[in-house]
Image (cartoon, rainbow, N blue to C red):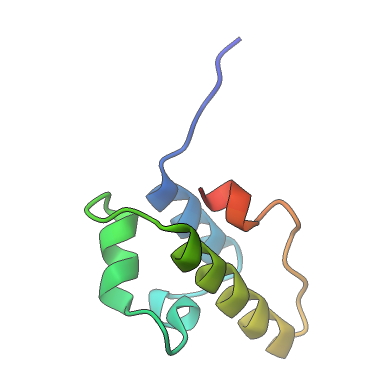
Length: 79
């Protein structure tokens, strides 16, 4: 049995793609698009606080769109 462990950057990108979000959508006011890009390309590490902000910002955008975030996508999933 093979277990696929996805890199953090791939997880964030898949989250964005599933909900048709761009990097600017998930940064809010506390993060930068550049940081998200660096994380997605493996050039920066994802901290717990950054993961929390990404999930919070994603939920806020989806709430506006009246879409519920799949519970699979959590801080723990991203980390």
